[in-house]
Image 1: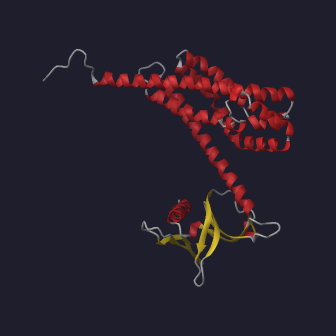
Image 2: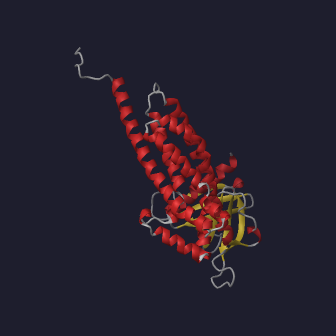
Image 3: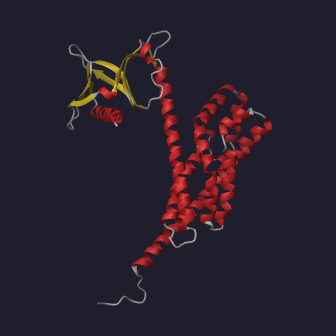
Amino acid sequence: MENPGPGARCPVQEQRARWERKRACTARELLETERRYQEQLGLVATYFLGILRAKGTLRPPERQALFGPWELIYGASQELLPYLEGGHWGQGLEGFCPHLELYTQFAANADRSQTTLQEQLKKSKRFRRFVRLQEGRPEFGGLQLQDLLPLPLQRLQQYENLVVALAENTSPNSPDHQQLTRAARLISETAQRVHTIGQKQKNDQHLRRVQGLLSGRQAKGLTSGRWFLRQGWLLVVPPRGEPRPRMFFLFSDVLVLAKPRPPLHLLQSGTFLCRAVYPMAHCQLQRVFGHSGGPCGGLLSLSFPHEKLLLMSTDREELLRWYHSLTLAISSQKN
């Protein structure tokens, strides 16, 4: 057996070297991106929040609704950055974690923030002119206020990716390993809570939109407390006669069949009359045809206790998406 040369390194040393390279690269990226993040937070705090407060362009409730805890988030970054610049990763991130609740608050306010921005831009000429003037500053590089408002939520996702990577590539014997591991866990938990908040807000937006599209006695309060899955046109195949196009709205627990209002309807043109609501807990789903990869569409059979629906589409991919969404809704009601 040949003896390794004097310059050879054992596998353990090579692994440690790889960890150290990845750790150094991740730490450098965290530092550089934090500097840029803090700069952008400061620009918004100075040129929007600060001037709006000084001029009184927006009343305090509107300003709070628009920006949420922006200045507190900016302050948390100002506290963190010196630790990162000094290479005190564990200490800095451990001290940063109590501020994570600010990101949860910011996420909970995100929908209200965008609504407030659009409302103020629409109704206040003074505010509209102010925003346009500030966005034109070279410091913003062409970014608009609506592009800047989601910045903290985007940064939270970066924190999760970078801090988890930093912890994973830190030796267990390192003095800041426990601090980094704990920080990575807390940041990941916060990111998951923020993701859940975002999903609920998107769902609420869909529900409000769909509720505005539906009319009729069965449509009242229909979308309350439900999860929206998808909507689209499908052809209803009757026992006799030609297939009829209908709009379907699929929620977590019901399938809604709706008929379009006449285009010339004075008050409700572009909306849909709710004709039937089918409970997914009692649905049996079957693909009648459309299994193969051919270009023609397919047919789905939906059986309910007192009715059977045959739904057709000439688009096979669209029908497949409907099949998967319907399967998801049915399985969620059986769990």
